Image: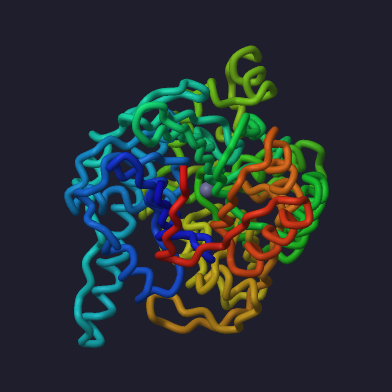
Length: 470
Ligand SMILES: [Zn+2]
């Protein structure tokens, strides 16, 4: 078996790993890179291999940094099957369409500026037509249903507890002639936290010979959920006091549901004053419907709330004000303060959140609250590291807003949770590849694994190739 790492290698975005065995080529994830604009654009518009040569894609979950390049793969000639859970497929339908239309809108906006400055026009990477073509290639597979996806490749998805439909990947690969040796390749995808709302807790691998693990928060500790809730209350109260605006950059899928749960609980118990919460996303309604159609992914509490208590409003969506059209989104400019706006993209790399930041980041009454991971070189990370100017659509804005972060809402396991998850595999894997983490985080997780007696650990760089003998 040959493994090659093409994305999320010493970085967190662009998850993409290639597995070759028995003359077949299987891609684990096909994610978009986020970060430095020029470099991301280049990486997102090409592949380091011939797309036609790929036989199948196995997709861990719907987040764009894992799925966002699928339309590009199809555009470049891929004709195989894309395997995912049905919830992931349905989320991808909404999220990839959204990604394509956001790109088209962003391109239009940038081109307006470029026209003024005499710069060349840019094109969106792909269109909604490419998205539709990709959706035709999906084959869905539920959790714990082992299926042979190609000769000698058996695939099992298990719950990863990260977002709706998210899965860990177990590939049992039979190689050689006659009596074939089976190697279990296990891939964590993005691993969630225990006890998070809506989705079930992650399920440990029953075995793994070779493990590919994420390391987003390697070496870091999130703190318990109730601390996150207290900090949220404090920030909301301060926003209320100075009649400001609280902007939470986040996608409609992820831990947004936890934030919304807590906001509602805090308002009910009068720990924070009532104020409007706007989810400024054309995606929100679709996503709500998709959540409702996938009770197989719920944890017990959500199942009870949704299926037994009359089936009303388990995610708090009805308490929110949705803005669908761009016109509605623009009206938020004049909405009375205090107010809370939840808007994508989560790392401030595109989408409507940029327009809210553009208009409000210079106002000291604004607070920008990050609840998800901010990758290197994204605007989100720059704001978190204290940059006093923000470059948005090519223009500079002075940052006078307060910048805050709550790690407890992360949809990712922290360093200790990752180590526990891996240590719980009955027999230690012979080889561990640490991916999906910036160099420090990946190194911290690798050091932790080394301490716990894991032998052969590698932190691959983009393009690195490993031969695993069977
Ligand atoms: Zn994810």
